[in-house]
Amino acid sequence: MGVSTFMNLLIFRADGVTPVGGNPITECETVKIRSTLGWNGECLIQGGRFFVRTPDGVEHVAADPVPCLGAATVNTGGCTIGQSTSISTTETIGDVSYTVQPQDVVGDQGMFSAVWEDGIVHIVNHPPQGGSRSLTLTVEPCPD
Image (cartoon, rainbow, N blue to C red; front, side, top):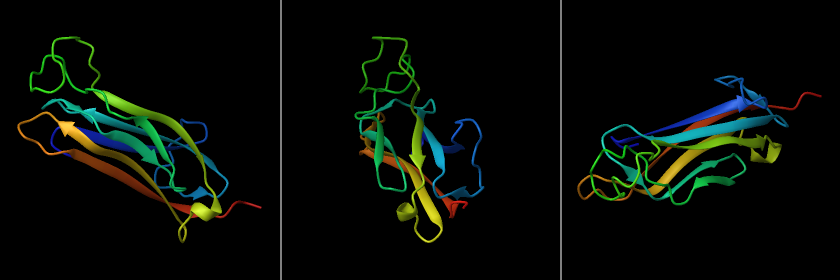
């Protein structure tokens, strides 16, 4: 991620409250994925796509395009400043449900990713921006 953005990627058990952390998940288990893309105070960001990719390759899109994220008092060009004082500073993908399937596991690993691609960071002549966060979790067989 660039100097003006942050992104997190969190995996929870099916209850949406208990974090998986570094613990294994099991085939046939349902997990919840949550990710946030945000602005850290240096400039506004917008555009591009923001999504979570689950181990089955499906992209769960939160925003396409990403709305203007930042503070309405910042004047860095790009987003229309002063129109509103309620420009959000984050965009969240909340509680995407995914059930682990044996065919989605490589070795004993399941890969989850959050991706922001082809976005705009409103500082002088910045090329398209983006970034990603990935988590690889150990997957154990379904209990009998």
